[in-house]
Length: 523
Image (cartoon, rainbow, N blue to C red):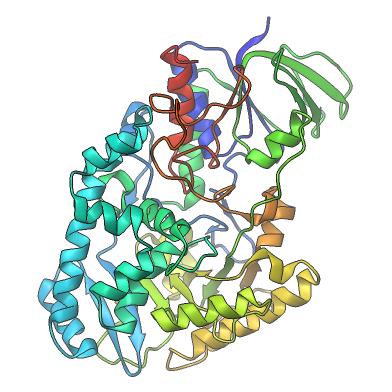
């Protein structure tokens, strides 16, 4: 007996597809190369002897639709953050408090010298919020045409601002403060190496970072990102899917649906051919779902892949013995670090960093943002660490393209880390190193991951966290409207990873849409 569906890749999207298909009665097998599922949505203890479960790669949840959570009965808690962001400015800072409009207004006035920027902020994000409310439901439906998407948005001003005009131009026109401009633009540059004044790739990145589940909220998964993948794996298994880890897919025949994989663990059972532990095995499926980067899928079907995409981020994970002190005495560090804490991300600083990275240099003052998961969810720490005031800190650095790390991965990582720590120090009242916890071996609790590290460790071509550059959430090619954005050149094979249209981020949307393409008979 063959499987109805075999899913290559056990990341969160593959698990979503497996759960939906198994729930519908399909016989489903998931093959995952690593010894665990979840892809980049995992929790680990990277520091020996330190009881802190860090979200090593992805770290917040916005794009995961509530519909998927409800459909699959996911046992998952997502907590909202009261403070959207804090941006140090000299000895003061810009605090956005979602529960205290007066405090936010006072902060804008203190930093920008009046109420003009706040008024522009409220108008802009009011417009963005309405676009999110209208557009988000379409992400779980067949692709609209561009004209249909514009009709759904229903606002010509918003369409021009977000879909047609470079977001950098729009932001420059709407806001006068360099600091406020930068806070807005950071959402256009997450994992995306682009000049927002010229490149609409930044618009696409911005759009996906502000429309999640119709609200754009970035929520904290209780238990860390591993809890998200764990809930999805539990759902898939509960509905009857089979999941095999340590199964390295070697080839896919798109015509027959036959898949060859190597058993890394020496534990193959069920309806597969081959009985040599550590050897090659085959399995056949009516349909193959590739929860893989498009470049990896191309290799597996024997095609020559296009030039690899390029990731552009530096991820640093810390465990702190205590929160750092701020230069701004009016804001509690627990408030500042519970939301997104912006570090040297003004518009001009972002532009300077992009120019330096484009020239092949690690930026002198790398722009970055951090947040402390444990201020919203302390459960990822052991009791002793919690009692002692320890916290985790996650840093996401911008404008760190893979090209900077190719020739000397270790040396370039160290240079980027040094520059980024200096960037953090420049906005704090004390060096971040003074707050670092040390493990029983005396080593500081700090790890850095570059795009090249992600390419090696997680199998992501170019270390691109979205598998390739993000696409518009509508059909761009004639004939694609009404399809699901997961189709490939082979009828048996669907793409259900982040590289599918409307992919990127921890969303489960490509997994849902690939499952729906099969279940609705559109394939």
